[in-house]
Image 1: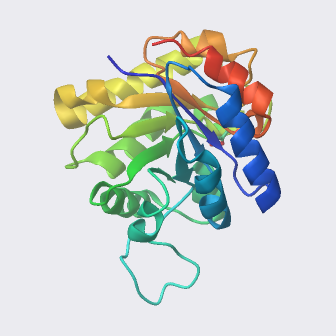
Image 2: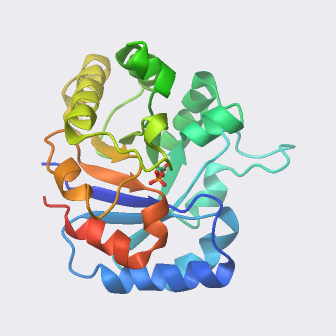
Length: 247
Ligand code: 13P
C-alpha cells in the first residue's frame, strides 16, 4: 500500500529566521503522524532548515534543480549539490513552466537527472483553466506525463503532484470528485507508460489545500497526499492537513 505523503512548498517565502522557526513548529506539531512529510524550502534555507529538522520525522526538499552535473550555468544548482542537503526535489512546478519557461523537454531532462541521483522527484503536472474549459485536461496530463516518464522506471521513489493551475493560490480548490478523476487518469496513464510499477507511485493533489478541504481530498482512492502551498507556511494549518492523512 502507498503511504500518504504530504509536502509543503514554501515557494519564494520566509526569511532564514522564519524558516527555522516554521520548520521547528512543523516538526513539533506533527509528531506521531502516519504519513511521510517533507518541506520544500528556498535554496538558501536548506542548510538552516536541515539543522532545524535534524533527527525529526520531517524530510527536506528543494523546489527545482538543473540537469547538468556542473559547469557554467549561472544561478543553477545540480542534483549533487542538493543531495548533500535534502531527499526530495520538485520538478516541473507550474510556476516554473509558466513564469520561467520550463518546457516538457526540460522537465524530462531534470527528471532523468534526479532519478540518476539519490534525490526523489515530485513531478508536477496540471492543466490551465482554459485547457479545462475546452475539455483538454486529459490530453494535457497525458502529454506532460509521456514527456516526463516515457522509458524511465517508475517506482515508489516517484511522486506525481496533480496541480490544476487554476486552483493554485486562488482559493479555488478542485472538488474531490474532479481531483480524484484527474488522479485516476494520471494513474492509468502511468500504468500505460510503466506497467504495474505505476501502482507504487504516489499521487498528490495540490491547489488551495486547507484543513477544511483536506479530509475529503485525501479520502479519494487515487489521492495519496498533498502538495501544499500557502497553508504549509502556517504550522497549525499544515499540522491539521497532515492529521487528516490516513494510510
Ligand atoms: P497553494 O496551496 O497556495 O494553492 O499552492 C499550491 C502549490 O502550488 C503547491 O506546489
